Length: 101
Image (cartoon, rainbow, N blue to C red; front, top):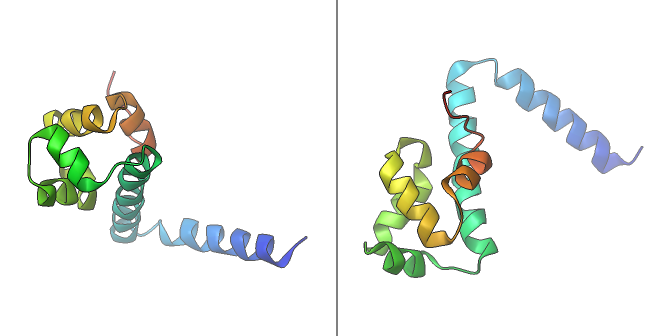
């Protein structure tokens, strides 16, 4: 087994253990969500300004959406998804969210 693989396993175990603390788990989820939205945007070679222009908002609004994606209204997240060129379902999947049935 490679050293990098052992380190990753140890890190995964540490994160899993730490996520038993609700406060840490919430912060971790928020952090992962931040990275997910920016990743979706960057995979499409879009800047925050380009997304803002498509949404008809100022760039700081897009930055705020990416900074706090779990606190964004459904309507605003739909507009973000459309501006980035993905479905809302794709955004939800990237964020690890499940829709209530």
